[in-house]
Image (cartoon, rainbow, N blue to C red; front, side, top):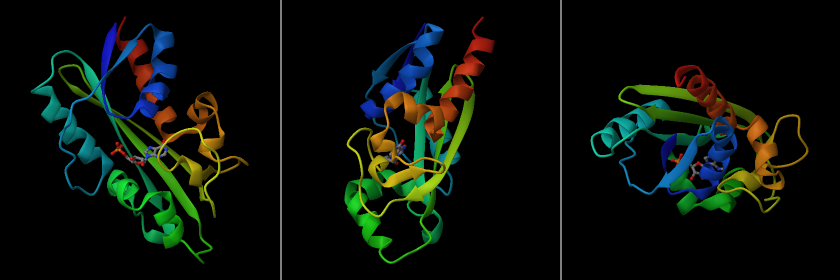
Length: 184
Ligand code: IMP
């Protein structure tokens, strides 16, 4: 079976393949810009995007909407993570947190799958923002996010290591489990 993953992010595709290929699912990356509405939650952004795409794309597809939520910034950048990454980047976040001792943060991911109906799967990982970027793997805010209980940032981990604990890993795991049960 072939599933379209609507994303321009090759890092997300690499992570999705780790979960779905063992099920015999071929993940095909499709570049298709869709509106990311301004909303308070990732769920709303993902659901709107999936419904909008369902009127324009043939066959089953999924997308992932995710974000970094920093406790001392009251959840910022959250739903605006992609924009903030593009404009401020990791150094901008480090600057905002200069002198701040509460470094707690979490990543959250919502995978929305469309097969004629909408199914959503969520994952979250807690951790902290480092004081400097560390590591060169991964993407986005990976170099400044260290998950709780680990010595390494996401950017210092392999895709496999990151997937085992990451927000997207948890959402993809739930998605893969659902596919296994529903695609018999
Ligand atoms: P979107 O889900 O494509 O809207 O993007 C969310 C933004 O959050 C991305 O541009 C990244 O900067 C950031 N992000 C989401 N997931 C991750 C991750 O696993 N590692 C690092 N940054 C992430």
